Image 1 (spheres, helix red, strand yellow):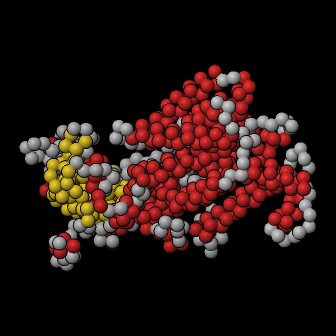
Image 2: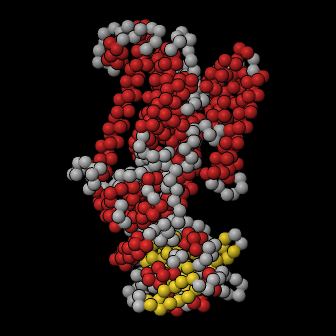
Length: 272
Length: 349
C-alpha cells in the first residue's frame, strides 16, 4: 500500500480535489484529454470559456454528477466513484445552473435541505440545523422570506436561495456553475465575497464558472481557460490569473477582441 | 425570528413534529370515525352498543351475550369490507404520491404506468372464463406484476434510463392494455359485462379481510418513512438531489417497485378505483406542504378515510342496489379538490 497517498503530509498537504488523467467529452467534442488538475486548500478558481465550451460538463464531471470518459477525480485522495453519494456530499457542494420547482416548498425548507448529507436517516432537523439555515438565509438577505413559497421568488432571489442552501451544506470543496447568474451588481459582489469568506474560513477550495471577466479578475487566484482539446495537445490552459488574463488569450478564447484597460481599481476588461 | 413564527421558544423541528402529530392524529381519528360510521350504516340496523358489546366479548372483558344478528353483520359483512376499503385507499393514495415524485409530474397517478391495465386484462379474462373471485383477484395480481416487469424491462432496454422514458413506456403500455380491455368488453357476453364494468370502475363488494395486503401496507409505510427525506430532495430535481447526497438511481428503482406493488395489491382487492391516487396527494400537498415525512403517512390516512366514506355511500345511497365505489370517489374527490385548490395559498402545484 502506498502510504504517502493516505497519510497527511504537513509540509505538502494533498489537494482537496484533483483530477488524474481525466478525459471528458460530450457530443463528439473532447473538453480535456489526460488532464491533471489540483485544487488546494484556500485557492479560489475560475473557469472561463464561451457558450458551449463545456464549463458545465467539466464541473459536473469534477463533482461526480457525470461519468468521466477516462481517468478519475479524487476528493481528498479518494476516488469519487467509490464514495457513496452521501459521503461525497458531506465534502463537496455544487451550485447548479438551473433549478426546477414542480412542487411547492418554502424558502426555509429548501435551505434546510443543505443539511441532508449531515443528518441520520430518520432524524429531523435539530435547532442547530435550523440556526445554520437561518444564518445562511441572513447572509443572502432572505430572512424575511423564510416562510414564503419558492415559486414566489424572483430569479435573483432564487439564485440567492441556492447559494444559501450551499452555505448550509458547508462543504470543503465548492463547485459553482455561474453563481453570478440573475444577480444584480450589488449581490454579485457581496455574495461572492461572502462565499469566498466561508470557503477560506473552512480552509476549503472553490471553483466557479463565470462569464464576467471582471468578477474573475476580482475574485479568482487561478483560472482554467477552456480551449477545446485536440490531437495536437492543445486543451484547457491552467494557471495564475495574472498570467492568463491577457488580451491575446481572451481574444482566442471568446473569438472576439477584448480590451484590457488599466485603472486605479485594477485591470478592467471590455469587449471591443 | 420573524413575524411568521409564533412561539419563540419552540424550535422549527419541534414545531414540525407538533404539526405532524396534529395532522396524523386528526386523520387517524377521522379514519376511526369513518369506520364506526361504516359499521353502523346499512340495511340492517346496528347500534353503537352492539359494537361495544362485541368488542368487550371478543377481548374477553365481558361474557354477556351479544346480539347475534348484529355480530354476524359486523364481523362477516361490514368489518372485512371496511378494513379492505381502508387498506385499498391508503395503498392507492400512497402509490399516487410516490409516482408523482418518481415521475416529477403532478398528473401522475398509480395507474399511469399501466399497472391497473395489466391487472384489468387478467381480471376480465377470469370473469369471461366464468371463474370465481379468488381467480379474478389472482389473475389481476399476475396481470399487474406482468405489467411491472414489462414496463421496467422496456424502459431499460436501450441502456439509457430516465423517469421520462419510464413515463412514456408506461403510458404507451397502458394504452395497449386499454385496447385489449376494449376488445374484451366488446366480445364479452351480456351477463358478464356488468361484473366487468364494476371491476373496471372499482368495486369493494367482493372484498374480504385484507390479510397480507394490510401487512404489506405496513411494510410499505415503514419503507416510505426511510425514503421520505430523500424524496424531499428529489422535488428539487434529480441533479440537485444527487448533489445533496441522494443515491438517485437506486431511489427511483425503489419508488417504482414500491408504487407498482402497492397499486397491484390495491387493484387485486378492489379493481381499478379511479381518481383517489391522483387527488388525495394533491389535497394533502396543498394543505400541509411537501415534506414527505408528514405527507406520506398523512396521504395514506386520508386516502383510507376517503375510500371508506365513499364505499359506505356506495352501498347505501340507492340501497339495496350497490354502486361501484369508483363512481363515488370522483363525486367526493372532485369538489373537495377544487375547494382546497381555491383556498390554498401554497401556490402552484
